[in-house]
Length: 227
Image (cartoon, rainbow, N blue to C red; front, side, top):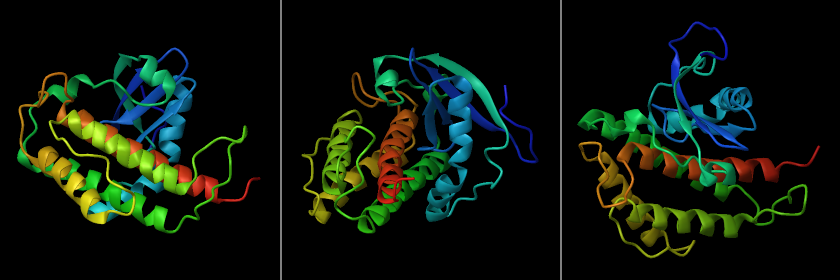
Protein backbone atom coordinates (compact mmCIF):
# COMPACT_ATOMS: atom_id res chain seq x y z
CA UNK A 1 0.00 0.00 0.00
CA UNK A 2 1.28 3.50 -0.80
CA UNK A 3 0.00 6.95 0.03
CA UNK A 4 1.08 8.66 -3.20
CA UNK A 5 3.08 8.12 -6.32
CA UNK A 6 6.37 9.89 -6.93
CA UNK A 7 9.84 9.76 -8.39
CA UNK A 8 11.72 8.29 -5.48
CA UNK A 9 12.34 4.86 -3.97
CA UNK A 10 9.52 3.75 -1.67
CA UNK A 11 9.93 4.47 2.03
CA UNK A 12 9.26 1.33 4.04
CA UNK A 13 6.74 2.01 6.78
CA UNK A 14 4.98 -0.07 9.37
CA UNK A 15 1.62 0.71 10.95
CA UNK A 16 0.89 0.15 14.62
CA UNK A 17 -2.88 -0.19 14.85
CA UNK A 18 -4.44 0.83 18.14
CA UNK A 19 -8.15 1.07 18.88
CA UNK A 20 -8.11 4.87 18.91
CA UNK A 21 -4.81 5.78 17.25
CA UNK A 22 -2.57 4.51 14.47
CA UNK A 23 1.18 5.14 14.28
CA UNK A 24 3.04 5.20 10.97
CA UNK A 25 6.80 4.75 11.42
CA UNK A 26 9.56 4.76 8.81
CA UNK A 27 11.63 1.64 9.43
CA UNK A 28 14.96 3.08 8.30
CA UNK A 29 14.63 6.56 9.82
CA UNK A 30 14.57 6.53 13.64
CA UNK A 31 12.24 9.20 15.00
CA UNK A 32 10.21 9.71 11.83
CA UNK A 33 6.94 8.46 13.29
CA UNK A 34 3.58 10.21 13.33
CA UNK A 35 0.10 9.20 14.38
CA UNK A 36 -3.50 9.76 13.35
CA UNK A 37 -6.96 8.49 14.11
CA UNK A 38 -6.89 6.31 11.00
CA UNK A 39 -4.31 4.55 8.87
CA UNK A 40 -4.58 7.15 6.11
CA UNK A 41 -4.33 10.10 8.49
CA UNK A 42 -1.23 8.59 10.08
CA UNK A 43 0.42 8.17 6.67
CA UNK A 44 -0.52 11.72 5.69
CA UNK A 45 0.95 13.06 8.93
CA UNK A 46 4.16 11.13 8.33
CA UNK A 47 4.48 12.64 4.84
CA UNK A 48 3.81 16.15 6.16
CA UNK A 49 6.77 15.89 8.52
CA UNK A 50 9.35 15.28 5.78
CA UNK A 51 10.72 18.88 5.98
CA UNK A 52 11.09 18.64 9.75
CA UNK A 53 12.78 15.25 9.68
CA UNK A 54 15.09 16.47 6.92
CA UNK A 55 16.69 18.72 9.55
CA UNK A 56 17.58 15.64 11.58
CA UNK A 57 19.12 13.85 8.60
CA UNK A 58 21.07 16.98 7.71
CA UNK A 59 22.39 17.19 11.27
CA UNK A 60 23.49 13.55 10.98
CA UNK A 61 25.02 14.21 7.52
CA UNK A 62 22.90 11.47 6.01
CA UNK A 63 21.22 12.00 2.64
CA UNK A 64 17.45 12.21 2.98
CA UNK A 65 15.33 12.39 -0.20
CA UNK A 66 13.11 15.47 -0.42
CA UNK A 67 10.44 13.21 -1.87
CA UNK A 68 10.74 10.61 0.90
CA UNK A 69 7.08 11.09 1.78
CA UNK A 70 5.79 10.75 -1.78
CA UNK A 71 5.69 6.97 -1.76
CA UNK A 72 5.13 5.29 1.58
CA UNK A 73 5.05 1.52 1.29
CA UNK A 74 3.41 -0.25 4.22
CA UNK A 75 5.39 -3.46 4.75
CA UNK A 76 3.87 -4.53 8.06
CA UNK A 77 0.85 -3.90 10.26
CA UNK A 78 1.13 -4.53 13.99
CA UNK A 79 -1.60 -4.73 16.61
CA UNK A 80 -1.28 -1.80 18.96
CA UNK A 81 -1.79 -1.63 22.70
CA UNK A 82 -2.76 0.81 25.42
CA UNK A 83 0.63 2.46 24.82
CA UNK A 84 -0.36 3.11 21.20
CA UNK A 85 -3.64 4.71 22.19
CA UNK A 86 -1.94 6.69 24.94
CA UNK A 87 0.26 8.26 22.28
CA UNK A 88 3.54 6.39 21.85
CA UNK A 89 4.78 3.77 19.34
CA UNK A 90 5.00 0.80 21.67
CA UNK A 91 5.56 -2.22 19.42
CA UNK A 92 8.66 -3.50 17.62
CA UNK A 93 8.42 -4.42 13.95
CA UNK A 94 9.36 -7.93 12.81
CA UNK A 95 12.42 -6.59 10.98
CA UNK A 96 13.69 -5.02 14.21
CA UNK A 97 14.76 -8.53 15.28
CA UNK A 98 17.27 -8.91 12.43
CA UNK A 99 21.00 -8.76 13.27
CA UNK A 100 22.30 -5.21 13.40
CA UNK A 101 25.58 -4.83 11.51
CA UNK A 102 28.26 -2.23 12.15
CA UNK A 103 27.47 0.30 9.41
CA UNK A 104 23.73 0.18 10.05
CA UNK A 105 24.21 0.47 13.81
CA UNK A 106 26.41 3.53 13.30
CA UNK A 107 23.83 5.06 10.94
CA UNK A 108 20.87 4.76 13.29
CA UNK A 109 23.01 6.02 16.16
CA UNK A 110 23.98 9.08 14.13
CA UNK A 111 20.28 9.82 13.60
CA UNK A 112 19.55 9.42 17.32
CA UNK A 113 22.41 11.79 18.16
CA UNK A 114 21.09 14.22 15.56
CA UNK A 115 17.65 14.07 17.19
CA UNK A 116 19.21 15.10 20.50
CA UNK A 117 21.06 17.95 18.81
CA UNK A 118 17.88 19.20 17.12
CA UNK A 119 15.98 19.00 20.41
CA UNK A 120 18.67 20.92 22.27
CA UNK A 121 18.81 23.60 19.59
CA UNK A 122 15.05 24.06 19.55
CA UNK A 123 14.90 24.12 23.36
CA UNK A 124 17.57 26.82 23.45
CA UNK A 125 15.45 28.98 21.12
CA UNK A 126 12.18 28.36 22.96
CA UNK A 127 10.78 30.65 25.67
CA UNK A 128 10.09 29.11 29.07
CA UNK A 129 6.36 29.70 28.87
CA UNK A 130 4.60 28.00 25.98
CA UNK A 131 1.16 28.53 24.54
CA UNK A 132 -1.27 26.19 26.26
CA UNK A 133 -3.27 23.54 24.47
CA UNK A 134 -6.98 23.84 23.69
CA UNK A 135 -7.90 22.81 27.27
CA UNK A 136 -5.12 24.75 28.94
CA UNK A 137 -2.82 21.75 29.15
CA UNK A 138 0.77 21.06 28.16
CA UNK A 139 4.13 21.39 29.88
CA UNK A 140 6.20 24.55 29.70
CA UNK A 141 9.72 24.30 28.29
CA UNK A 142 11.74 23.35 31.39
CA UNK A 143 9.21 20.75 32.52
CA UNK A 144 9.23 19.32 29.02
CA UNK A 145 13.02 19.07 29.01
CA UNK A 146 12.86 17.33 32.39
CA UNK A 147 10.22 14.94 31.07
CA UNK A 148 12.38 14.04 28.07
CA UNK A 149 15.43 13.40 30.25
CA UNK A 150 13.38 11.29 32.65
CA UNK A 151 12.10 9.20 29.77
CA UNK A 152 15.63 8.74 28.43
CA UNK A 153 16.83 7.47 31.82
CA UNK A 154 13.92 5.00 31.82
CA UNK A 155 14.51 3.97 28.21
CA UNK A 156 18.21 3.43 28.96
CA UNK A 157 17.29 0.72 31.46
CA UNK A 158 15.70 -1.19 28.58
CA UNK A 159 19.25 -1.35 27.16
CA UNK A 160 20.92 -2.37 30.42
CA UNK A 161 22.06 1.18 31.26
CA UNK A 162 21.44 2.60 34.73
CA UNK A 163 21.61 6.36 35.19
CA UNK A 164 19.72 8.73 37.40
CA UNK A 165 17.63 11.31 35.61
CA UNK A 166 19.94 14.27 34.96
CA UNK A 167 18.98 17.77 36.03
CA UNK A 168 18.12 19.91 33.03
CA UNK A 169 21.17 22.13 33.60
CA UNK A 170 23.66 19.32 34.28
CA UNK A 171 25.24 19.08 30.86
CA UNK A 172 27.88 16.58 31.97
CA UNK A 173 25.26 14.15 33.31
CA UNK A 174 23.10 14.57 30.20
CA UNK A 175 26.09 13.90 27.95
CA UNK A 176 27.10 10.84 30.01
CA UNK A 177 23.62 9.32 29.73
CA UNK A 178 23.32 9.99 26.02
CA UNK A 179 26.85 8.84 25.25
CA UNK A 180 26.20 5.52 26.95
CA UNK A 181 22.92 5.03 25.08
CA UNK A 182 24.69 5.85 21.83
CA UNK A 183 27.54 3.45 22.58
CA UNK A 184 25.10 0.57 23.09
CA UNK A 185 23.10 1.40 19.95
CA UNK A 186 26.26 1.75 17.84
CA UNK A 187 27.60 -1.68 18.76
CA UNK A 188 26.81 -4.54 16.34
CA UNK A 189 24.29 -6.91 17.84
CA UNK A 190 22.25 -10.01 17.09
CA UNK A 191 19.12 -7.86 17.08
CA UNK A 192 17.88 -9.40 20.32
CA UNK A 193 17.14 -7.57 23.59
CA UNK A 194 20.32 -6.82 25.51
CA UNK A 195 18.70 -7.45 28.89
CA UNK A 196 15.71 -9.56 30.00
CA UNK A 197 12.46 -7.78 29.07
CA UNK A 198 14.57 -5.16 27.32
CA UNK A 199 14.17 -3.51 23.94
CA UNK A 200 15.51 -4.52 20.56
CA UNK A 201 18.22 -2.02 19.56
CA UNK A 202 16.41 -0.86 16.42
CA UNK A 203 13.19 -0.30 18.32
CA UNK A 204 15.08 1.49 21.10
CA UNK A 205 16.64 3.89 18.58
CA UNK A 206 13.23 4.58 17.04
CA UNK A 207 11.51 5.14 20.39
CA UNK A 208 14.24 7.38 21.80
CA UNK A 209 14.44 9.53 18.67
CA UNK A 210 10.65 9.70 18.31
CA UNK A 211 10.15 10.92 21.88
CA UNK A 212 12.86 13.55 21.59
CA UNK A 213 11.59 14.87 18.26
CA UNK A 214 7.93 14.72 19.22
CA UNK A 215 8.61 17.15 22.06
CA UNK A 216 11.02 19.27 20.02
CA UNK A 217 8.33 19.78 17.40
CA UNK A 218 5.74 20.38 20.13
CA UNK A 219 7.91 23.20 21.48
CA UNK A 220 8.04 24.72 18.02
CA UNK A 221 4.30 24.46 17.53
CA UNK A 222 3.42 25.88 20.92
CA UNK A 223 5.82 28.79 20.54
CA UNK A 224 3.95 30.01 17.47
CA UNK A 225 0.92 32.28 17.96
CA UNK A 226 -2.45 30.55 17.87
CA UNK A 227 -4.44 30.95 14.66
